[in-house]
Image (cartoon, rainbow, N blue to C red; front, side, top):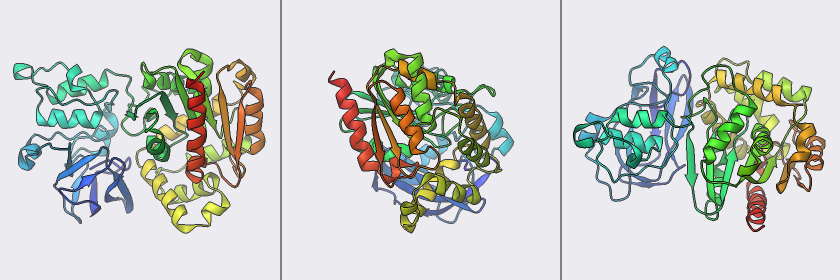
Length: 418
């Protein structure tokens, strides 16, 4: 049971969207959970088979409680044995923990891919799969060198503290998320691009399974260092940043040009803008990120009028924002807003130093980053190509996903063929 809000201590399984024994895909909606009168769809974190479920629809259980097991193809799961050895590890909070306990305990984070060819306790193997820790790189302290839960936790916390997903094969392509959203916001891009590229997506500090910053020191420069860490040795890479993520991508290109093969800047802002700063402040003044009032207030800034007019699309976007907000504490939003506001106006004069092939993408109906600002960025970067998608709002990766995917793939292929 995930923790969907700062004060949540238990949640109710509203509905299972899959049945035991059913094959499932990563990103597929697995179940619906209700907490504090808010329903959130929970996605499968990996592909496999739903081997067992432990909580029926309508049941309410504490955060950290075991809900289900996803098994690898061909893997056999002893339902009862797994339950006995299960160790809760959700946003750092054990089963039955209070919200205060959940806030005070640091969260481990993944950095590598899981492997199963070693001796490991079932609970340790499950935790390694969740945290994407390579079991072959873990030194076991159990009997006969068996890997235990604490060994996995130690290995996870020794990395850069970022929750990183790596999918596909081919030239590396890093996706850098915008303000207040996690790596699931790139699902339309990841699914389309992983056939041709090694697609790397990660959660910023404090979001999802990524560890928080140790204090209030979050800056765009620090986030650029995290982006570099997420790349690991997969360099040079095409860096794709959206909104705040574009600021991180620009900072990365200026401070570590050796790791950047090409840039795709989506709805980038580099100069201070009273409207953008006011909107950022307003989005951080709610007590709960998943507040329905906050979600509804964000939609008109993200989406075009045409998209808002289509109820199914609008409500799907609202549901996605709701789910991501549940994984993003309000304190992190405030840190990000301060970091971006402090960065704006500091790098515009240095864009001429960027020497890699650059594509700038904007939306003609973007209220947060107007077309003139996007055009200014494109003019400042030597040789940059500009693409303004007519009729699209700020969330062009959602409204014009297919076209954005085509443009990103084209830019990435051109940079690798140089």
